[in-house]
Length: 351
Image (cartoon, rainbow, N blue to C red):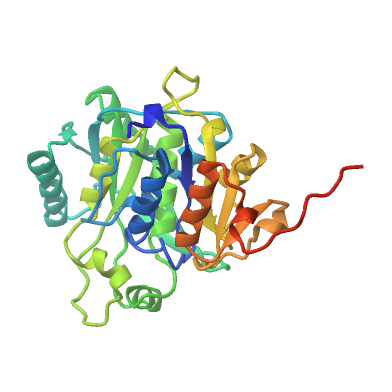
């Protein structure tokens, strides 16, 4: 269904870099997104949910919205403008070695030849961006970028000279083959050590240029291992994570300061689905204050300890995403949840 005609809009949140047991790996929340997209007229979600390295699943009623833009949207500052397709700019970090750069260029060419995506000529930054990975005391991952000026100059060139409408960013991340955190992640536990830094990079570009952007890290292939969790396996199948980023950005909505006749506003969000222990994010708080229903999924465990009740948020608690979809079906049908159980209380008299 065309998002322009959406009547029941859902926002699926799985915050980045907090070790979510579902959605904390490359694209492992995609089955959840596919299920919710069958119930909602329009699903709004972010790259962390939809990017599966070389794997992806295009859904015409799903809007791919970067995290910083989601926050601005939820506050009512930006509106989402559905598009038929974007002209994509590819931004490569000068710190990527020649062979690894060629692998990413070939991946980009493949999306043109096999998927018909529209790309501008690419840009290489005038300096290495120098990414550093960090971990907070809570266990969440984050990172820093040393040469933000070089990042901005490259993005500006893609927009001004290439007429790019969305930007895929590929930066050289530190190889960390022997770390305990990486080994735990590959075995299906712990936190994605890259995700937090990736979010920082895309946030910078979206904030500066108000244009859709997403990030793919450039890394040397990891040693082959038989001890890999199925949830981490998407990251083991190739040299680059770029294909899912390009596919997502190809139909990412534009960001408008003023609404248009067919744009989506925060007021149009009916329901937000979030991990039950990760309810402190800006987008969720903003939408809860606007009256959107909040569904907190208990089975999706995270490193955070922020329950909705601690923040005064009235949430519908469910055990699983399957139960969350049942709540959505009842909600859009106008059915009271208390009517679905074997018994409920009688009506009282207001005094």
